[in-house]
Image 1 (cartoon, rainbow, N blue to C red):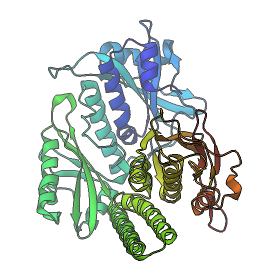
Image 2 (tube, rainbow, N blue to C red):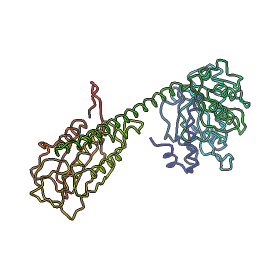
Image 3 (tube, one colour):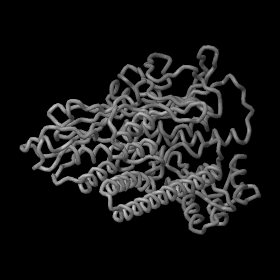
Image 4 (cartoon, rainbow, N blue to C red):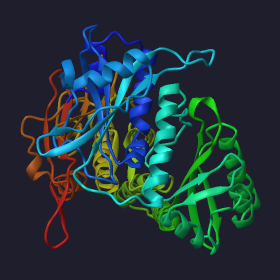
Length: 532
């Protein structure tokens, strides 16, 4: 289905500013549809012969629709849209005519011209027509609610024809709440309540106001009800601004443990301020859940912070133990454990600063790579480079993947680039994966030692490679039978925790390449376990 902008640009000569105004109407006209108990269709002329194109449609939530089928994209001409032609050419709201039938549904037609005011604030030319079509198949008993809804709808319809509705939208605001059914209050020009719907009355009762709203000065009432004087003043000023013809931002009022969201709209048909429309919604439970989520997020971040601190303490203890150990092999093993614990602590440090259980992984990889070049036991200066982006990863993937990359990077640096004076016979080697001590050729002295980490996503899979230009794998290297702890950790994490695959192979231009493929999408089994 084409969008409003696509249809308007393809079939009409409307200016970008005109199309933007039509977008604002379509973004805020659910209010008018609900008040009118009618479908609204936005029609734009496509030629000078009285042909119109429907570019948007909204159905009421307060009444049955007049159209079972979507009308967007429909081009109509002739007698069927004569009422649209009158509204467009004469610039007035059309309400004459007998009911028409759409299949078995009788409907009443109305047509409202759409104007965009000029930069000088004057009413501009008609750029489109809003068709207001009411389903007449269900007889409605006139009530105070219905009469107030329809009266307010007529005022807003006239404001569309004047070019003063909808009002400008404030940054960050949406048009989803409050709605007509949440609660409606109508004010006269002096700010006194002339009508309050039952839902509106209930919302104010939650704030502690038990009397009837009709006759109350709403601005003064907001000042009295608000638990915070500043909130009360802002809510009161919003009502007064709407009475002056302005469109204030939405306000919240907190009182007696309840929260109510208010939206005030000026009513000024034909440019004359006659009062204001105030929509209200009880959002007490929404704010309670928000506060619970904030508390939960803070708790989770604090847990990650403490886990990070505990891991750093463990690393410090292992580091102290390594300094006291006389055996070189034991010292090396303890130092490797320090680096592994520290890499996990990096993930928890990042999670402690995040509001969800996901991390921006690129920064973690860069820090692990930098640490690998600093702590690796080699005399050669090795450059580290990252190509592509890992993006945001869930915590359960990030924790295992950072350990895998830590092992691969450390082994690439330590075993792929031996000291320059080593000979082929003297040095057992493994490369980017690390692994079995066997003889390997010397490094080409003309190449700058470098390790490159590459990452890209494809079809919900993360593809990662760790490539070095070092000595490469020996001919008889077998990753499956490698006995080094680093390689065992890598294999266990990739195939177990990450449900992925790993391949170790000779690089295209020498050196070694470790290829990882990790699924990003996870499902949960019937027993609660996560799987790919």
